[in-house]
Each structure stands twice: as structure tokens, then as C-alpha cells.
Image 1 (tube, rainbow, N blue to C red):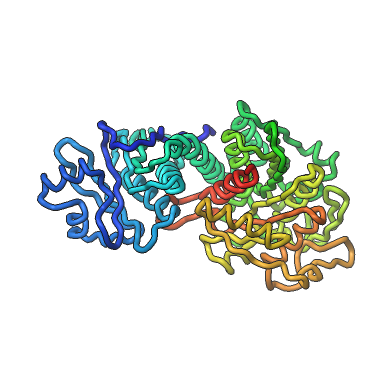
Image 2 (image 1 turned 60 degrees about the vertical axis):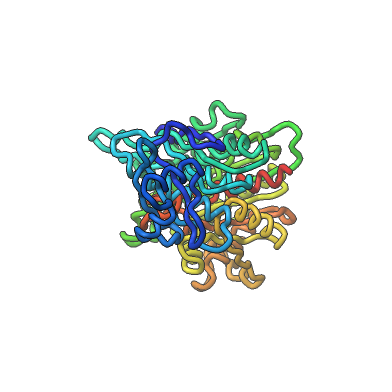
Length: 500
């Protein structure tokens, strides 16, 4: 599958002369963020300001509210997007830009549009957020069809700003497209149907993505996994005709002093194995590789941005299917490094493939390990479908991840790993059991299991993205239906903070 392409981005202090749609913001109170020249022309033509007309047509400036106003003469159509009230955060602006550009794209028909976004931004963080939201919102998964694909859409995006610093515009023009493409790539991988994206083809997608980058690429096939003793990947993938893979990316910039290891769960389709899921619960399970998608796409972005941090990334890829060769509840598996696990439930497969990859990552001697996985329904029960869970070895590590998530505009909430949780993993026939003795605290128990495969003394954080990884509701902000790419921006922000 081709890597998604996004519109070209320009960052400017003036509205482009050639323009089809201008997106402006409107809060609960106060004027719309219309550049002066267009504001005067609009008022002269219609006898009222953009704000007055928007409010007369029902806009209250609430978050996500969008409407289209008429063009002035041969000028651009104006899209007014609500930014809400109170103090506006960069994430508010990111969502507003996304909602406005997504609405503008809906006006295209068969045309290719040039769109500008003017939300009154002046700070570098605001400028970056607007550019990211505008670009990310243009991503669409192209359906597989015998009919000709629609030709309309957004060709170019210009972000109009009021920043005074000379470097802010240039930095945004460089970094925002890289981050937006990484998010779109993760979304694309999640959205590809599972008969087309399976362990081998996913590994090939990653190879094609990084082939001209500063990343080294390695993939272990089933023979290499067997030779290396990766019992978790082999067991989970053993029921499928499509064997598992372990993808490893390495980024080693000159002068980097900190080593970050990233591990992503890549279950390309999860039936639950012999503990078969209900049919309704299986339909969206092509998204069970969203953790690997986020980790691998983010690592590529980190390398493109040239951040001064060593990164080793692992994608643990398998398809969990029921068959006569599938692993069973009560099987004892020997994972990478020799630790044995009694399998409690074949639908708790993600932690097994992650354990293999985490154990392998120990050998890289990283300073910080972060794993990302659509791991537990229990995390969704606790935090809903827009907030991801965060568990860590210590509060300092958790705070580092939470700071990165805040900078990136992604929602994470720290959960504990209570000391009594580990006892629930005791086994009579192996070193530990993969599932607990009761149904309580499932997300915490899964994290406790993964922690057993991280070298003691190594800082580690676990991101459970089961809720926000896939969205099937009405679009909002820069988020449309399907894969969301959650985690990509946080991992890039984390790498930036580690680079100093």
C-alpha cells in the first residue's frame, strides 16, 4: 500500500492571494480571527462583520461548531469554526483547525482546493498545533473499490500566523508535516483490511517506509524466531497460516546520549484464538496492531526530524487465529530469555508477544523503555474510548510521559500497579501465569505481567491505548473514523524531551 500523502504546507503572515477557503476561529465571546483586509472587505460587502453574520446564523463559538459564510467577490469562502470559551490551549486550536479543514474538504466536490487557516496564533506551540491539526484532518482512507476514486480534496494548506519570532514559522513548516505524515501512516496501517495487512506484509510496509531513512531495519521470520526462542510470538502466531514476525528499527544519531526503547503490540487480527471472541467484538480487531503502528511510525518521524536520541523500536507482529495448531489455555510457554509462562487465556495474547519483545529490548540496555498496546478492554471500562492508560515503574517516569502527552495534545491518565497485583500472576506449573485469578483490575494486572520482562532498575512505562486507538463515531476535530494514530505524537514529544 502507498504511504499516505498530505497537502503541501506553508506558514505565512499574510493570506495567500490564490485561495479557495479561509478557516477562521470564533470563541464564545469576542471577534472572529479574520485577517484585517478580508474582515474589512466582508463588512463592506455584507454590512456586517464575519462574527455578526456567523452569530446571526446560529454559531455560538462552541467547540467543533462549523459553518460556511459566503465569499466576498472573487475571494475565498469563509469557514467559521468554534474554538470554545476561556483560555484556549494548543490542543483546542489543533482540534479547531482540524474541524475547519475537514469541513473545507467537504466543500471540494471534484475540485482540488487551496485552504488557509487563520486562528490568531502567535506562540510557537500554537502554530505547531494548528499546522498539525490542519494536516492530520485531511487524511482519508481510500476504499478498495472497482470504481474510480474521487478526485476532490485539499491540495495545499497555509497557516496564517501572528508570531514575532523568526524561527517559529520555519520550525513549524519543517516539523508539522513530518509528524502529521507519521500519524497518517499509523492510521493507514490500522485501516488496511486484515487480509491485506498481516505479519509478513506489515513488515514489508515498514521496510518500504524506512528504506531511504537513517534507520536500520531488521525482521525475524518464523525460523529466526524459533531459533531465538521467541515462545510468545510463536505460540500466538501458531494458529495462523500467516506466521509471526519481529521487526526491529535502530536509529543512532551522532552525539546522542540517551537510549529510548519502544515496543509495540502488532496483532494484525485478533479472533481471541481458542478463547474465541463474540462476532461483534471481533469486527474491529484489525486495529489490534495500533501499538506497533504508533511505535514504528513515530520512530521514522524521530529519525526524519534528526532528534538527538538513540531509539530502538520493536514491532511484535502476529495473527491470533484458532486452528489445530493454535496454542491452548494451560499451555506452558518459554519466552525469550527463558522465563516460562502458563497461558491462562488465548485472548490475552498481546502480553505474550510484548513480553518477547520487551525481553529482547533489555539486551539493548536502554535508559527508558516504553511499550504501546491495545492491551485490555478493562482499560476502556476504566477510562472510556478517548483516554489511554499509563502505568510505570515510578512517578518520575510517569510524569515524563504525561508531560510529553500534554505537549502533544493526547490524553493519558496514570493508573497504579498495586503491590498485591503480582501475587495474582503466581502459577503452580510455570514462573508466572499470563492472567489473574479474578476479573478485577485487568489493565493493572496486564501491566504487572509486562513489568516482569523489563530488567529491574530500568525505567519503563506502559501505554494501554485500547480505547482511543480506533474511532467509529461521528468525526470531531482532526479525528475521523477508523484508526486514530494515537501515541505517535506523544512518542515524538518524548524523544524531543530526551534529546534536550
